[in-house]
Image 1 (tube, rainbow, N blue to C red):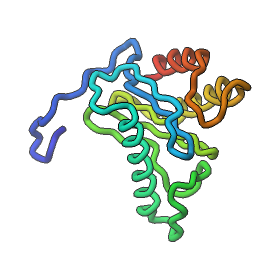
Image 2: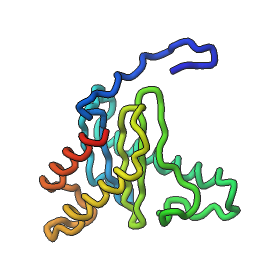
Image 3: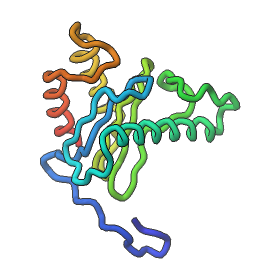
Length: 169
């Protein structure tokens, strides 16, 4: 990270690979904050147990959504915090970037939240997140054996997700 003086405080992240293996991890949460899916592809450091990690990520999303709603300069109505907004409604965030990663986020009208953490030089991922949601709908939501609100355990979805994420990131 560089401060105003330009001194390097921490090392730069590795340069993106040509093979497309720049996605670190992905989370899928339902509207109640239950982690339905957690996938790792390239996460070198594990600092928390999975439950703490999921709570921390959902709390971060809740806080960022709250902040963007409160900071919206175009609306006096600050909305009901925690309630999913329709696409194009209100003020929302799509991603943020640090010196070591980029977090991209999408929330569907049904409250499904998809988070993809990638290399910081990765471009805009709004369309790829929509495609991942379509994979979710096709392989999970339409699956008669899947019970909504439970962990996603569908090999076809996992395979399609792995192939797609490796091609975009």
